[in-house]
Image 1 (cartoon, helix red, strand yellow):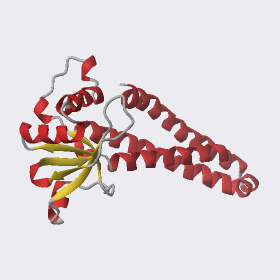
Image 2 (cartoon, helix red, strand yellow; image 1 turned 60 degrees about the vertical axis):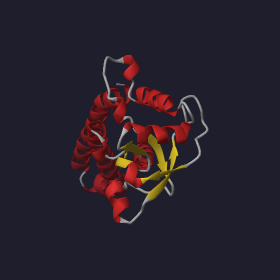
Image 3 (spheres, one colour; image 1 turned 180 degrees about the vertical axis):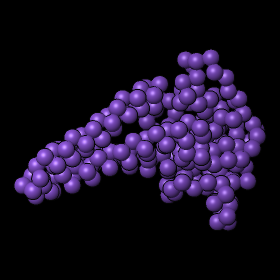
Image 4 (cartoon, helix red, strand yellow; image 1 turned 180 degrees about the horizontal axis):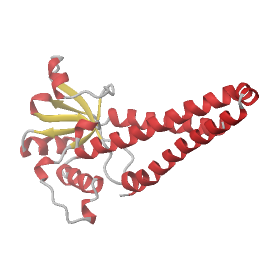
Length: 205
C-alpha cells in the first residue's frame, strides 16, 4: 500500500512539472504576414518562415492528415525571458511593458535554441501559454488530465488513511475495515479505467 501511495505521489509530481512546463511555454501570433515573417527570420535566419511552418506542421502532425491550415495563423513558439507563469498580452500591456525578450524553440533536428529576440507587443495579435484558453485541444487536455490527477490524489489520500489507521480498525472492526479496503480498491481501479481511455486518446492519438 505504501508503494502504491509513493507511485501516486510520483505521478502527481511528474504531472505538476509537466503543467509548469506548459504554463511557461508560449505561442505568439503576429498582426500580419509581413510582421510575422520579420520575426521568423530574426529567429531562424533567411529560411525562418519555412522553418516555422515546418515546426507547425510537425507539432500538429498535419503531414499525416488531410487537414488544412492558414499559413498566416502560424505562431512563433518559445519562452519569454524570466519564464512568467500563465501571462498573456493583456497582462503585459497592462503592466506598461512595450517589448519582451523571446527565445524561440530549437529548429527541428537541433538541440540548440536560437538567440533571444526582442518582440514589440504592438506587433503581437495574441500571446498565450499552453493553458486551457490557448486552444480547444488544451482545454480538453487539461480538463481530462486534471480530473485524472484529482482521482489519483483522492485515492492516495484514502490509501494513506487506511495505512495510518490499519491497526486501530483491524482490532476494532475487521469486517468494516475490509469493506472499506474493497471500496477504496474499486475507486482506485476506476482511476485505472479512466487512464486506459486517456492514454490512447491524449498521448497516442
